[in-house]
Amino acid sequence: MVLNYQGIIIAVIAVAGSGLLISIFLSIFQKKFAVEVDKKEEAIIEALPGNNCGACGFPGCSGLAAAIAKGEAEVGGCPVGGKATAEKIAAIMGVDAGAFVKKVAFVKCMGTCEDAGESYDYTGPADCRSAAMAPGRGSKACNYGCLGFGSCQKVCDNDAIHIVNGIAVIDPEKCGSCGKCVSACPMGIIEIVPYDSNVRVACSSKDKGNITMKACKKGCVGCALCVKTCEFSAVTVEDNLARIDYSKCTTCGACALKCPKKVIVT
Image (cartoon, rainbow, N blue to C red; front, side, top):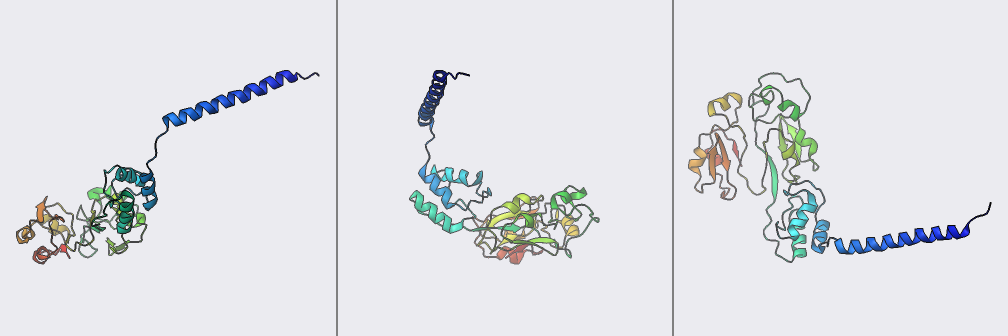
């Protein structure tokens, strides 16, 4: 068998030449259509904790980093990173970090086993989402209360949430305000509030006072005494439930002292 060396050499040269042309083309294409990377954005991503929890309101740390680099978000936009992260990002951006407001999660319910009534015996899966799909949004007489199965506890990475006497209790010292518990709660009773605010409404019931009183001993009855007591217009009653505007609240505690059901806690 006689090998055609000339044909083999031509084939090798053709393949090598094609590869060279393709590499040249790709190099030109890459340079022409390359997306310029923002060095500040990269540095901000490195400074962020990398939890990608979405508590900042953006789709992960990269989304927040891009927004900060463009000036569309505050340097203290990461609640998990806290003051230390805000100061690092401020240095990257060449701005003042400003006053960082630490926040924590808070459970707006005081319906413990002793205080909240039961409408029936729930025998389904020990999961808040499953229980919330049962009649009456769970077995508790209050249709707005904590179901107590700990779906929020299961998603907390900081061991800041525990079920105590039928309701979720959050340790503010451990809470990183990531917001995972807020998303996990099917009842929508967990709220992110300022850490320094010692005045909070621990109820979520929107029922009228007489209905709330039958369901739970510790429910807000919408009497509005807190509204009349507050000198700073920080308290309102909406849908039979007291609400606090933390931007106006001075944490004087006058509303808590006046509350007849003691659901405004300090």
